[in-house]
Length: 164
Image (tube, rainbow, N blue to C red; front, side, top):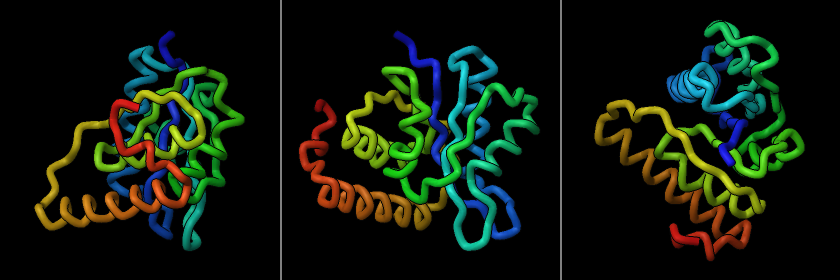
């Protein structure tokens, strides 16, 4: 059965409400999934940080700007990390399988978080932008540390194998 819902994971929003490049990329990709009929509904997940609007609210604005009807998306504005994206969105998920939209560098951690909650997901990532070597190294290090933290904190050590 093809998943009909995509969970779009939030990314940084500036205090003035400007979306980060990662947030724009993720929402743009999700909009294309909707417009091409690959999904029927988007769950926009992400909370507020440092006085900025909730990531979900900014994502909804981007969806509206792209011409999506209000019925195409639902907001989950409380999540403050990847695991909470799934725990907070879980009551909104009606499909047994789910498409998760995030960046490639974030995909392993998203998969670990979903697996730890018993969710079956398929990942759909936008094309990766060119990043200078130093930026790629910082992202890789951040994700490695965050993934290790998820493995230890949530008892997901069985999640190290890609075949599980």
